[in-house]
Length: 95
Image (cartoon, rainbow, N blue to C red; front, side, top):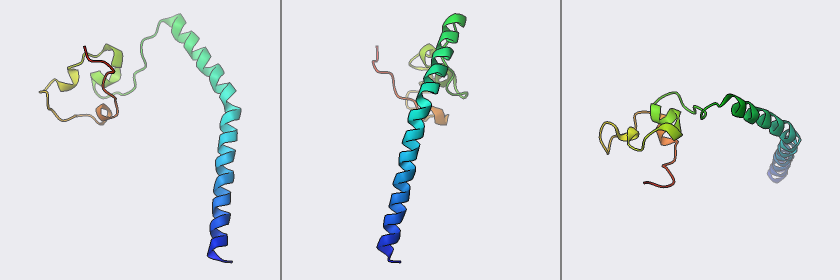
């Protein structure tokens, strides 16, 4: 078997796998939407606060409740202590 045939077979198998993944995602979408809607109604009924995304620092746990300077509590050019702080985007507008 030539190397080009091996390559074409490999690419074909990868494309079939990618197509199967997309088809599976489409089939599972309806089930996921119903779960999200039931979770949203539970949050509305119980009056829950924001989701705690990270467990490290207080300014990464509850983004809507943190002040703008809590990340720089040591000094303005302090390096980030926690890895999760580098995953968060800065606020869209600064007051």
